[in-house]
Length: 359
Ligand SMILES: C[S@@+](CC[C@H](N)C(=O)[O-])C[C@H]1O[C@@H](n2cnc3c(N)ncnc32)[C@H](O)[C@@H]1O
Image (cartoon, rainbow, N blue to C red; front, side):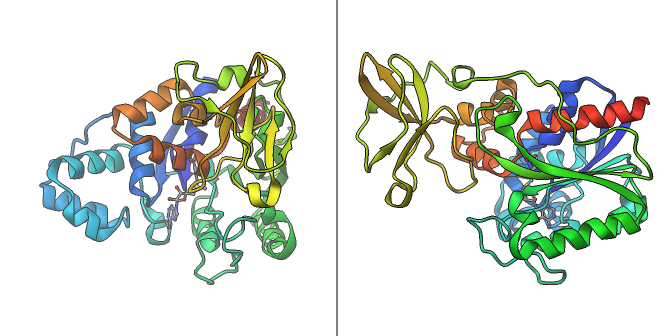
């Protein structure tokens, strides 16, 4: 049984990948501060379970605020039903909240620690403030993971972030982090994984570092065979709303007769309008990716819907419907997708960890 601490958990793409592989695992703790992400995790993995703790609504509110989850003023204004749901989500998924506030003595023992820390200050489209230690940037939360690694010494570690972490001004911190892990006794394996090479038609290059305490027999970043999906597996054919394609700028690429393609005109002033068999990277707070279809030479376009965004992240349709059952809006679900990790990529990495465990 692989015990997992999924920090910066979001919707729990790590847990989805483990679930799909059907090897024995148990998520013993999670950590996130975002209210919607906390609820999404619960709806997808927590099976809408209720906490056994008999707290009053006021005590539940205090519990949530103390963990640093959600905005304090908002939590104070939530009605009883919403407080109960959020409390159930945190307690049943053992969301330890703000990583800066976690007391390591309360962290359960675990074999795998996953840390897909915020990328906003590293990403090419982000603030570019970097991740220097004590800089206070969101990406510098990486250094908070040290206290957990040193206290718990998990057998395996999994880092995920944008590929910019490994280049330019971020490279120094990246190399420092790898040296730190080596000093702690870990062997590191890392490379850039692009989801387009793992069966999902989305361009999404991300760095993944897999570390093992001590020596390792398996190459923890080798590629495994993953089921291929094409654009036809992504499209929700029930979705209406196709409009005549009116390009805003010069068009690069084309869609074959009586078929479909992805369309990206979000940066049409800079990049023009792009048509491709691969979808551009989904990003939180930057929606508007589209599909284009060619029907007997006539071109039509429409925006990707939230179900299609989930499919492009390798989530199951049931994951999407569970989030809808919890009343998350399509906009919230798309934001969650943009922040997340393509499940198929994680599956390939976890296959190696399970192989190593069985040697
Ligand atoms: C890149 S996303 C990770 C997504 C996640 N791996 C998934 O599967 O969807 C980073 C996450 O870190 C969370 N986060 C930001 N600050 C945090 C903090 N101080 N403590 C814990 N989590 C934090 C964000 O709310 C966000 O969900």
